[in-house]
Length: 408
Image (cartoon, rainbow, N blue to C red; front, top):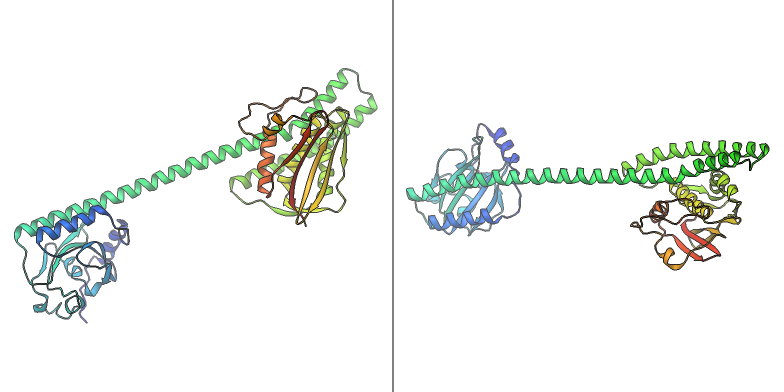
C-alpha cells in the first residue's frame, strides 16, 4: 500500500492543528458556503475543506461527496500539505500514487483533484481546500487564484472561530466567578444571620440578668444561679461558633449535609441549656417530651439550628407559659413538634412567616426585636433534610411548628 510522506515539521504541525480547536467540530454555515463557492468557481461537482490529522483526514465542510473522514494514506489532501502551492491530479488513473486509491476505484470514481494547502498564521500546512471531479481535467489560472484566496479566508475564519471560543471561555470563567462570589455572599449573609439569631440569645440573657440586678429584682442566690447558667450558656455559644466556622467551610466547599445518627432527646436537652435563662426571664417552662432513646438521621448542625430557632421563637412569643418539644413516628420518618402556649398568630401572619421579602418580624411579648431570617433559614435547612415546616396556630392559644427527619 502506498504511504504518503510525513512533513518534517509534523509534531509542530499537529500541535498547531490542535491549537485551533477545529477538529471534530460541528458543521458551520460559513465553511459550507465556501465549498459551495469553490465548486461553482471551478465547475466541479465536489469540493471539500479538510484537515489532516495524525492518522486521518477529517472533513470540515463538503459538497457533492458524503465524507466525514478517511485514512490519511488514502487522502489526496495529505499530499497537498507537503507543498506550498496548488497540488493537482489531472487524471488519477494515470498517476501511480492514486491508480489504486479507494476513492478512485470505488463508487466515488474520483478522476480529478486539485487542492490548495491551508497555511496557518504560524506557517503550518493544516489541511486543504480542494475540488474534485469524476472526469479528468485541469484548473485555469483564475480558478487556482480563487482557491488560493478562499484558502486564506478559511484560515481567517479558523482564527476568528478560535478567538470567539476563547472569549466564550473567558466569559464562562467570569460568569462562574460571579456566581461563586454571589454564593460566597449568600453564605456570608447566612452565617451572619445564624450568628445574629443563635448568639443573640445568650447575650440577651446576660443583658436581662444585668437589668434584673440593676433593678434589685434578683437575690444574691438567684444571681449566683443565673451566673452559673450564663457560664454554661456562653460555653455552649463558644461551641456553637466553632461549629459555625466548620459548617461555613462546608457550605463554601459545597459539601453535602453530614448525615449521622442523632440521639434526639440528648440533643434537645443540650439545646435547653442554651435557652434556660431566656425561658426563666419570661417565666416559661421548657418541657422535653421526646422519649429517651429516640434516634433520628440528620445533619446535626442543621437540626440544632432548626430546633433552637423554633424554640427561641416560641419563648419570644410566650410568657408565664410553657414551651415543649415532642416527637411522633410517621412510617420511616420522625415528626418533631415544638409547641407553645403563647400569643399565637392569625392566618395573615402565618402565611407570611417564611417569605424572604418580609422587611421585619413581629416583636415578642417583651418587645424583643427580630429579623425573621431565622425562620427562613430554618425552612431552608428543613428542606435540605427532606422536609418542610408545618405551622398550626390560634390567636391567644399558642402555636405548633413541626417538621420531619428520617427515623433510625
